[in-house]
Length: 296
Image: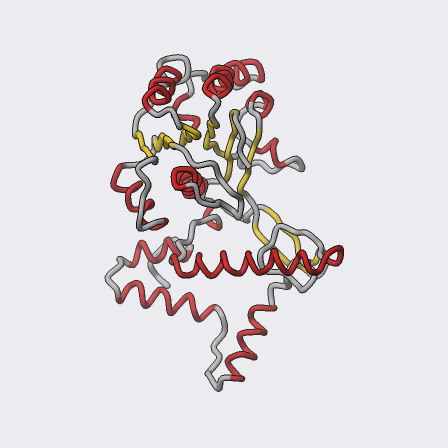
């Protein structure tokens, strides 16, 4: 997924860029799979420039109970051309197995206020050269513009000089929708508030990994009949699942087990009540559910 070079990881606010960046660093440090892809174990340095140690520690322990001694963090960094390259080079000398640098966010290490193609390209060029010199991957976490575009990479904040300089780009910015006219399709979220991060318990993540493993085996057996889409939960042939399918399944399953059925949305109210009963303040619970106020 990542080779030696300079990369941009871009997404809308609060879509989960920093969580993915942290999980990428952790996977490299532990030599574990990420997104069902193998990794080369080595040291990883995460410049978490918009976080506190307490916040990054809390996030880390949401992902694992056993952090790696090959995973390093820094809350401060010099800017590009003013000491950042020297910081990274020094760290490489101290950790010869360094594989990955993540800078979260790119804006925190920039100097240029101008956003022309030439200035953007020139500003990232030292990092591109450094990645090649040290034979490492450098990932820059960046934002998307609010304006939409038919070419998703044009939505990356700044000029196309950023895109032109880096060796690869990754984007997180879509939601699943259904209308009678279009059928099932992916689109950007309606508002920034619609894009939020939802924590999943480790047990749920484990179940999802098992499901993905079984799905990969099923795809191989199905052969050419499988239609590849970017969905985990699909129809039997890989096509996107209709939004009503989970609702119908749950209704039938409740009936089969003689359970009362109140609808999927009821789970949201149950979670809100359970979190508040556990002592979590209503404002935090409201934000988790996407509400602007604690009035549920």
